[in-house]
Length: 253
Image 1 (cartoon, rainbow, N blue to C red):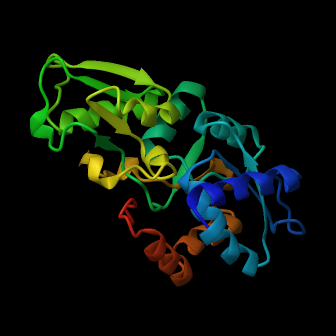
Image 2: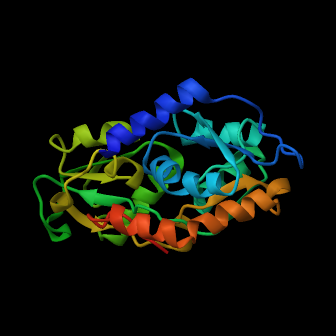
């Protein structure tokens, strides 16, 4: 089954079957509610992690939100137990901006943001007057600007004659034919199967950029959190990731 078909299946399953609250007691502690937005991290959780949790007796429900910000708000509000889409740089920014107490646990497989171009094959071809499209959301925009600095396109104080525009992340693939360069977040490049031949530079994966299991601080030591964490280290999931990573989209810690 293709990525888009699997993603559709996740959303359909949510539409038909999501219910219940996100509280846990000794008698109902096998029910987990995962807050997610459409993208690769929901796919690998549904396909690779949920079967392992079910084998331990868990029932996994999903709430699907429009984007990561909505999913994070839902987690804080108690409408979900966990998310697997945040990364420390994002979580720290969110906590500071909204007074959240979310914590990140472990490091998970992550798709790096990358620089793509239909016209250019090397970062050495950058020149004043060229155009670059980057994501609009603050956390992804900051990553894109850091990537452009790493690639030598800009400095902190000098755009070096480039015109940098911002778009919603999901709209960036359609910008590829219109501009010289596009920075695609991994959550976008994977589901649209961005052509690896158009990738000219990939961000350096620092610890603060790796996806994590994200929960409310009061839940961090719950047994179900440890079980989710263990599932990501299970040999069955490791084998699943090897099979899914045929195009080397994933950085696997």
